[in-house]
Amino acid sequence: MQIHIIFRGIVQGIGFRERTRRMAKSLNIRGWIKNNVDGSVEGIFQGTPEDIEKLINFCENSIPDAMISEKILEYMKEEDLDNFKIIR
Image (cartoon, rainbow, N blue to C red):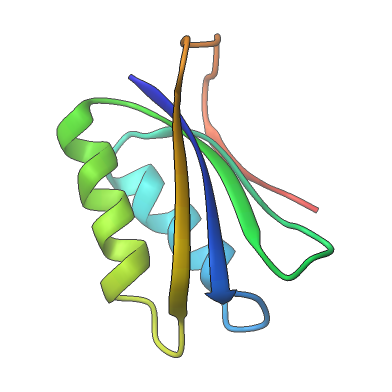
């Protein structure tokens, strides 16, 4: 399964991308995450539905100082991804 996700709220300047990357790697999720100029964080998550749900839950509830006000999620056709990285 693969999703495109955007988190809005307090999600930049607090280690959101790095913490998400570490958790994604521990769950064997592939994809990427990046900051957007509008203050949101955007990503592609690819893995099992259960592991993607765990990663989203982690992002929403376990990152200190993060306050997600909106989450936009879109299911996508899977691409050929081999790791999880932060795009700068």
